[in-house]
Length: 141
Image (cartoon, one colour):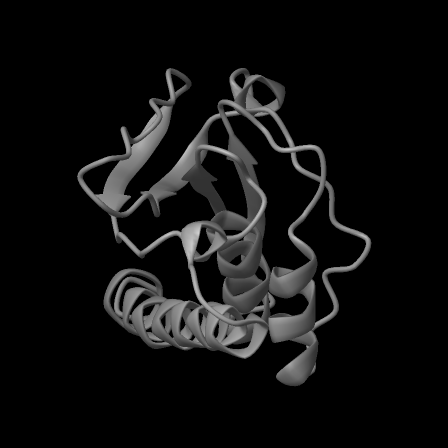
């Protein structure tokens, strides 16, 4: 079963979501992508994931175009606030879901306050992706 986690920049939320979902259910094929990709995975996303024992330091932002011909069983868009337009995926999709999160890349404050936002979003992604795995994957296995 293949899952695509989609966001705009593919530097924070979708990268964390990809790694967390793979950690929750290693039997899934999980990838992430964006439509206007960043130059790199955000260093604070890497740091936040390392805190929970997941290494994403070798990840790279990927364009959604890389996956258009493949098709996915689940597409999960993770874009958050009203300021942000969710990107579209035009490839074949079984089920489309939106599970939105704030973009920690826009957090403001001290370095510690900003990092706390990355931690919060990471933990929200884990909580919601555990629920996704239980409701959509395990119940239908």
